[in-house]
Image (cartoon, rainbow, N blue to C red; front, side):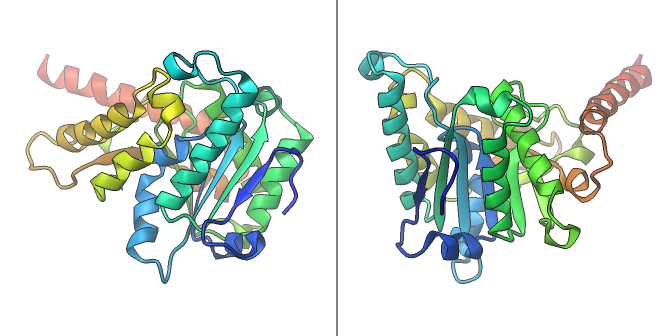
Length: 283
């Protein structure tokens, strides 16, 4: 498989042809950075590990990871050295998580943020054209990280360009840089991230450039999942051991006439109405 960036990396942990591996994928996550997949789509990783004969997980990282913060061991690393390290870490995560394929497109963040970048568009089109996943995990449109939002928008454009019959049955936008616990309960999609807790920690610990480099995602992501499970309902015991919250983005993909900004702001409006109504009820 050929992509627009010379440094793009395609890895099939079990060996074999990348095109055949991508065609087997039933659960696909397209994320901005190395380690985003493991934070937002652990539910899908577990689903595929639980049913390996029927399901296969695929990961796509769009950017090259050059701009990550660094301290300690990695404080003197150049952007080029960080890219090499982060590419190796993502490969290791794919091995641990039993991914069928891991693609790293290696685009600079600036290119992803630039609307209409031909290379980004072509690469995403090639990915979605080469597989037919049942479930696609993306960043959520209310995320506060600019690159995450840009990757989401580029993916939405690519998915909408597919013939209607080839679009995935379910598209989910999960939390990374802005939690989704603020959604009203009716809008929340609970992704079961409380399974395989040992694996969850191992996957995040793989990214030593982040953990030792000053960002304890290994602790933060697991703590957030537990907190969501506990604080989900006040009058019931915890149903799951860990939750990642997501939005159902399937309507945005199914209907290309829907305005993404209006769609997203409607979630905020429903929160406003919920808060106002509760205050009025007990005032």
